[in-house]
Length: 432
Ligand code: SDX
Image 1 (cartoon, rainbow, N blue to C red):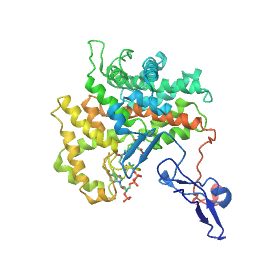
Image 2 (tube, protein in one colour):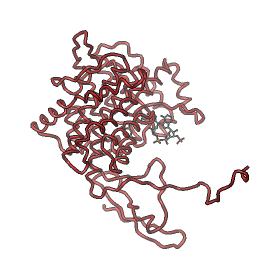
Image 3 (cartoon, helix red, strand yellow):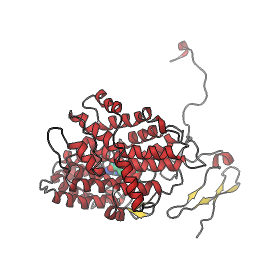
Image 4 (cartoon, helix red, strand yellow):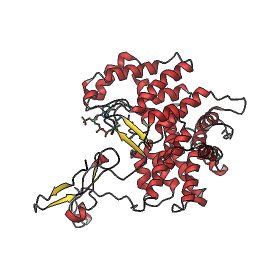
C-alpha cells in the first residue's frame, strides 16, 4: 500500500501543504522535509537524530523491533554461519556475493597490501608508551593521507577502490603496531601466507625469539566477530564518516573521524567498558546493587553493553556472540570463566527487571564480545580497536556510497537558537 503524503497545516496561516513520502524496499517510509524551511520557514528538531533518516542507502538494513540485521539483504546469521570476513567485505563494497574468481582476486589484493610505509611505522615511537591504542590508531589512520596521496582523487573510482583495499588491508597492521608499542615488544611484520585473522593474531602475539603458531580456533572466532561488527547502517561513527566525507576531505581523514567517534563508551568503547564493569561487579551477589545503580536516575552508572538506539529487542549479534562464548571457551579449554558466568547471570537478572524490560533494554553487540577477546588473550585496551578493524569496511562502503551519489551535498544541519538576542558591545567600565 503506497503511503499517502502527510498534510502539513501551518498553525498561523491555516494553509495546508503536502509533504511527500518516500518509501524504501523494506522498513519505515520517510517524510521528505527538504523544502520545509524554504516553504514554511521552520526546521525539524531531532537531537540525536532519533527520528531522522540522514540519507538513502542500499548497504545494511536493521529492524530494531524484530531484531533483524541484513547486509545487502543477506541475514547476518547466515553470513556468520556460511561466509568469512573478507567475503563479507566484498559483499558490503560491491553489493553482491563474489564468485570464486572475484573472491580469490579480492582476498589476494587485501592480503598482499598489509604492510605500511616504514616511516609511518616509526610514528609509533612518538607515542607515550601508555597511550591508549585508539589514540594511536586514529592518529596513524589520519596520517595515511600524508603517505598515500597518489590515490586521493575522490572523483576517480579507481582511487576510491585503491583506498578501500588499503584501509581494509592495513588496519590490522596499524592496530598490531599500536598493541606492540604499548607492550614494548618489537613490531611483527604481516605474512602473506596467512589469512586475514591469522595474520592479525600473528602480528599481535608473535615475538622474534620463538616460533608462534596461530590457534585456528582463535582466528575462526575473530573472523566471526569481524563479520558481526562489519556494518550497522547509520550508527554514530558511520554517520561521522559520511558527514566528514561530505566536505570532500580525503578518505583517510574521514575514516580517522570515524575511529574517533567509535571510541566513545556509548558506542564502540562499550566493549572495553563492559569488561571493566564486570570486573567492578566482581561476583553475582553484587549484581542487585549495580542493577539498582543503573536504574537510579541520579547515578551516572549505566549497564554497559545494554540498550540500543535501534534494537528494542535482542541485538541479533549479541545472541550469536553469546553462543560463541560457550563454544570458544569450551574449545580453548577455558574452565576459569567467572566473567562469562557473571555476564550470563547479569543478563538473566536484568531481563527479569521491569526497568530493563519496560525500556526494552537488551544486551547489545558489546555485551559479550569482550569475553571472547579476553579469552583470545587480547587486552581490554585493544577491544575497541578490534571493533574499528572490523567496522572499517562499513565506513568505507558508506563513504563510497555517499561520494558516488550524484546528489551529494555537504552535511550542514541547522539548530534551534535559544541564546541571547542581538545586543551592543559594553565597554569594560559599563560591565557588572
Ligand atoms: C554500539 O548505533 C549503533 O548501531 C551502534 C552499534 C554499532 O554496531 O555501530 O550497535 C554499536 O554502539 C552499541 C551500543 C554500545 N553502548 C553501550 O552499551 C552503552 C550503554 N548503553 C547506553 O548508553 C544506551 O543504551 C545507548 C547509547 C546505547 C542508546 O542510547 P539512546 O538510544 O539515546 O537511549 P537513551 O539513552 O535515551 O535511553 C532510553 C532510556 C533512558 O531512560 P529515560 O531517560 O527514558 O528514563 O533507557 C535508559 C536511559 O536512562 N538506558 C539505560 C541504559 N541504556 C538506556 N539505563 C541503564 N543502563 C543502560 N545501559
